[in-house]
Image (cartoon, rainbow, N blue to C red):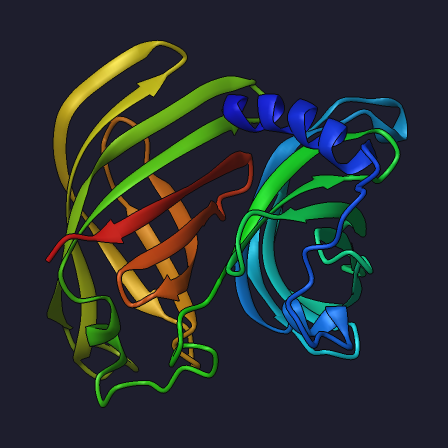
Length: 278
């Protein structure tokens, strides 16, 4: 969260400085083609709109085509309210010099405009240009083969292995600062049968983390959790049942070994990432 505020100041300067040269690849006739594809993104910061101060965090998936059209799926936290897996449309344009461009998300929970700069063919940094916003973020192109994911016979195996993760942000309305780092390992269990319920496979997490909540440290805490995959296997949900502070997160695959995380509990303004280590 804090690192993005510094990035916002730097990016604001970048997008306002006129560029005297072009970075378009030879033979480029449609700069929008450089952004066409599937991306995961994260953003966080603050808004001074609506006469107040709002804490913001979001994460999700962008599908862009060369005509400048976006399909956006995101989970967004706005102070004490969370909107999960909202899907809508947007637009983008790549500047004629191919150094960056602009994005518009037409999400009903909170429309946003942003300017972006390319930091390589597969990554952008962006800053909101919506009045009152102090919000920045990044997007990474989804690796080949995951643009249109296919689910394995047991979708839970898509998250198999051990992952390291980092999270940071805030809790509202109490305005607590939050951060955690750790490891979770997935396994597949069986849910018990019962009234109107048939037993079946469930995703189980074994979690070890160190967390800081307003400076109160819980070191090396271990506990259990759960996970589930979305119907299209583009991401899913993690639930950390750690005693210091349970949390629920939506995640989106960037590659087979990396996911983008965003808090999906009401009141959590949290984002982060995880990397598969084995």
